[in-house]
Image (tube, rainbow, N blue to C red; front, side, top):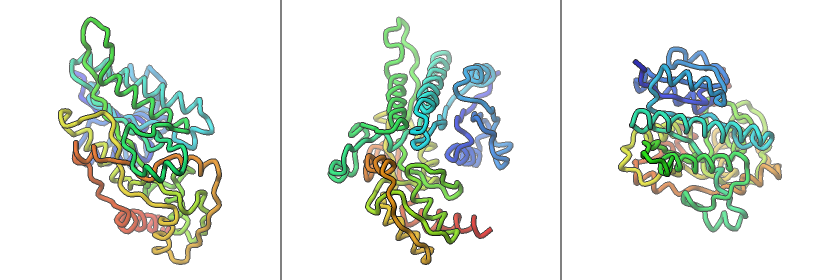
Length: 337
């Protein structure tokens, strides 16, 4: 008999690792994971891991033979900065990979006559405010507003959202026999900040980069203007959100796509919080014009009223708690070693 299982793609990434830890802590012993990289040793025994590319159709053909996949957390993606250096690779992974997983979910849903849950993390990168005047006048856009992304990653995520809605509401709409639709659920993340992952040059990484530099006693040259503001979220809240959305009763959900956010800070407000904990830190500003343009295209915040209303979304970490209880103590401890 095929064992009921939860599939996580992109499992070796920072969100994937944290998701495995949290699901395992909640008692899940049926986790399947896929990534081109091996899982860290700390996750041994918490999941059955397949080291493979999500574009490799044969791996998923194998999985559906052996497992009854009830939920898919599709975390695999090439992010915004990397996607600009290799747009074709980003499109292949972010669009073709998503399409492959959605098709798998659709086939399984139809075969079982029971919807497979498909949890899809999208991004603030789907927004494109077009100019700073729009950004100032519309600080909290709703899900369907200002969807004019300027990065390949943002374009890919917006298309992935649209594909998900198709598979949830319109899949094979001209077929004689009505298929069982995928239960597609999407969260749009703001910039995510982790205390346990070293920043890797992402577009929103100037915040954590300041902290890591300060904890090492190094000066930091910020690549955006002091007034640059976008929404952020601490990693624990990002994991709580997808698990909470997956557990929500379908009848409570009024849409497939939800903005979620926690707090909004400008670069100079982040710098002030960093210097409050590390007073000797020297922070200067030398905007990188192309990365600045991307940050300027993202809104100051996002309207997440629908998520709060429909499935009780509420971040546990505001800006103060994120820095004082999560980021600073853990990053300080990292370099104290």
